[in-house]
Image (cartoon, rainbow, N blue to C red; front, side):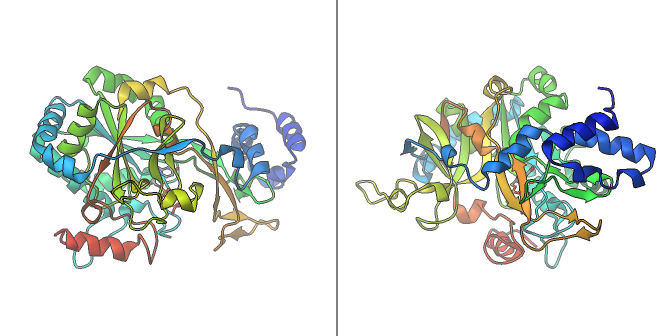
Amino acid sequence: MSTPSYEEIYTTLKQQNQLHLLKYYDQLTPDRQAALLEQIHSIDWELIGLTKKAPSADEDAPKDIEPLGAMELSEIERRREEFTSIGLDALRARKTGAVLLAGGQGTRLGFDKPKGMFNIGVSKTLYIFQCLINNLMDVVKQAGAWVPLYIMTSQKNHEDTTAFFREHDYFGYNPDEVHFFRQDMAPSVGYDGKVLMEARDRISLSPNGNGGWFSSLCRAGYLKEMQEQGIEWLTVFSVDNVLQRINDPAYVGAVIASGCDCGGKVVRKASPDERVGVLCKESGKPAIVEYYEMTDDMRSLRDENGALLYNFGVTLNYMFRLERLVDILNRKMPVHIVEKKIPFIDENGTEVKPDAPNGYKFEELVLDMIHMMDSCLPYEVVRENEFAPVKNKEGVDSVDTARALLVKNGVEI
Ligand code: UTP
C-alpha cells in the first residue's frame, strides 16, 4: 500500500469532519508526518460512524431467548472418570491448545503494566501470569504432555509481556510451547464523535476487544501450524481469573463427549440479579445474554423444582472446536461501543488522563462467537474454587477478593 498524500488525507478528513487530526501536522518531522498520515489512512470510518447511534443500539437487543440447561456438578461428579479419561486422551494426543487473552488494558484495575504482571502475592511474589501458568502446569503434569499455549497481546503491551515471560523463564513452562501474537487496534472517539489524539503525532488507538482473537491468531500464521499438529480444540480464557483451571481433563472430556461445537465454564449466579452474562439460547442458537438485557421476570424465572432457569453466569473460559472456528473466520462480528476513560490531548495539545469515562472504544467480543456456533455445553464449576477475577482495584472482583479466594483454595500468596 503506498503512503497516501497529505491532500488525499485532508480531503477525507474534511468529508468526515475530523480535520483536527492534522492540527499539529506542520510541527512534525517528515517521518512523524508520514506515520500520522498512515495511521489516519487506516481508520475505518464506518466504525467511527457507529457512534452516531451510541450508547446503545436497541435493535441489537436479544430476541426469542430460552434457558439453556447446564451440565451441573452432580452429573460431572457422576461421570468424572469417563470425562477425565476422554480429556486425558485428547491432551496426550495434543489435540487441545490454550489461548490466553492478555491484550486488554485493565483500566479498572488502574495498573500501568499488563494485568498479568500484577503481583497478587502478599508475603511472597506471585504474579497473575504465574498463577495462570501454575494452573496450566497442573494439567501438563497430570497428562504428561505440554499444552501449546498462545498468548494474545496488543500493540500497547506486547514488549512488556514478552520480556516479562522471558525474564521469568516462562514460569517453568516450556518456551517452545509458548507463542505470542498481537491483536488489532481500533481508534477511540470522544462523546462528540471526534477521533481522539493520544499525542500530537498519533491518534488514540486501543485494542479492539477480545473477539478478534481467532482472526489475529490466524493472521499471525498459527492456523496452518495448529492444523498440521492435529490440534482440534482451542480453549480461550481471560487473564484475570486467577483460580480458573485451564484445559482440565474433565472439562475437555465433557465438551468432547457432548458432541457440541463449544463449551463454556459457568458458575451458579450469586443472586438472580448478579451482573453477569448468562448462557442461554437465542433464536435456537446458544448465546450469552447480558444481565441488563434480561427483564426482571426472566431473571427470577424458576423451574418446577424451584431452581432458577437463568442461573449460570459465564466466566470467560470457553472451548471451541477448531474447524468450527475456521467456518466462521470471515464472518463479521458485532461491534460493541463501550464507554471508557481514554487519555487524550486537548485543544491546547496538553495530555489529559481523565478519571471518568470521556468517550467510546470499539470492541468485538468473544462471547459473540458462541452465538455463531450451533451448540454449546455450559459446564458448571464450583464458584469459590474456580472464579476469582481481578477486575477492580477494590470492592467486588478485586485484588482483595481474589487474594481471599486464593488462600481459601490453599494457594500460598
Ligand atoms: P475485560 O473485559 O475485563 O477488559 O477483558 P480489560 O481491558 O482487561 O479491562 P478493563 O475493562 O479496561 O478494566 C476480559 C479479558 O479479555 C482480554 C483481557 O485481557 C481479559 O483477559 N481482552 C480484552 C483482550 O485480550 N483484548 C481486548 O481488547 C480486551
